[in-house]
Image (cartoon, rainbow, N blue to C red; front, side):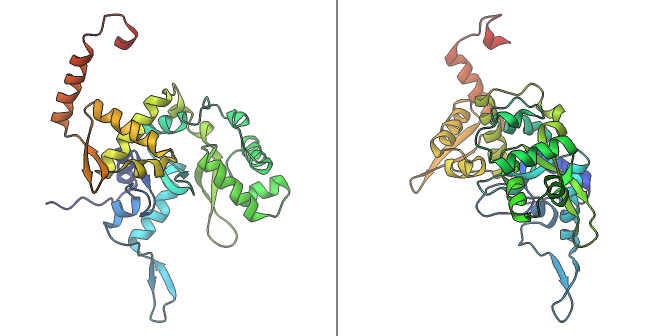
Length: 291
């Protein structure tokens, strides 16, 4: 079997995310998603540092240097949406623009910069952080604290994390600081990605697209795997996978009483879709289903 071609340029990294639909920056055993690290370094543990004979840090490894730079350059250049957007705890995620609308549609919001104001359950500080970024534009954590007149770094960082998981905020590159690492700038997601949020799909269509993207990149998964990524109920995840199977796009098998799903090969998928259409009968010209 031929070894996969490793990603070596920023453009290749963007193409990798577009093929995957959704990817992590670094691999995580709890989420069955591909990672930029694996695309750059291959299937091996993260090796991030070159050290001297005393064990002191000298530099990033070549692979980590690429991943570290690209995770910020991709969103800064508008190639990929990036932030802590999936998983219950919010993992560093890269989302293809072609998939972003489906992910955002599940928030129930319209895709306008100010529509977080209709979001239920935001804490006062979370609302204040979002308002500050809406008014000031892309801002780092230190800049947001200054705007709010607070020195509570942990509280503001927590609020930013919640707003990223809710797809209110997203990464917008980095800003250099006088000391330490560059600071990540965040922006209002529907403002930064307005073009990708036009004509948001219906929630049921969104779930199918997201499930199909994850299934295609993972190769196989369970309903629990799918639920963990998007914080869905397991029964809802299973229902979406059954819908893909009914459309001829997924195949299920049982392993130790656990149902495992895999993508249907393209030729078989075509036969499955034709069979599904024949069971439904012809679609009348001009009917809603034909448009």
